[in-house]
Image 1 (cartoon, rainbow, N blue to C red):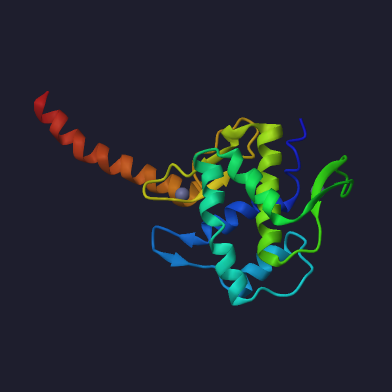
Image 2 (image 1 turned 120 degrees about the vertical axis):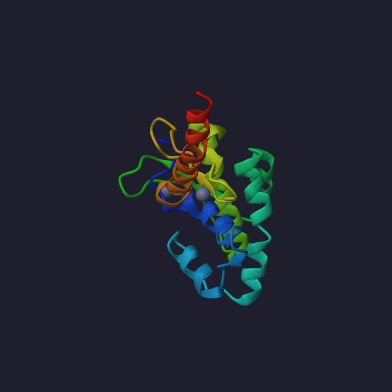
Length: 183
Ligand SMILES: [Zn+2]
Ligand SMILES: [Zn+2]
């Protein structure tokens, strides 16, 4: 199994767009500079992002989140269909033939199409069970689980995994004197 086009950096574009709004602190990290660099890292060669592009890409978070949380393949199909991009079979960087989306469209449409198409490739080759919302408390981050045994449950083991660990540790500390007393 090749795991679709997982070797392509575009696979993480959707999660970067969704996670650029950090629910836990209510901070929106998306700016023209951030959006430009997110897109360039995935092969965007057009103009730098404008403030209007940022507004348009923010509106993609809701349908993209639906793909991760509700496993809405329809939402991803819709984003691809409305992007104006078209499929092209390519071979590059040692990967076997696979589909890309290409075409001259505005940046928000390009991001919508590329991000959704990559999620469709994940679903096609790896199943919807690879699309997740982080299991961390109050964490709204989403991610594609690319691990071989599909064992990932946190956006970041160092942050959310650790938070859960600390919480469990505190809970044990609270419980143990009481359980000793009742024994
Ligand atoms: Zn590729
Ligand atoms: Zn998390």
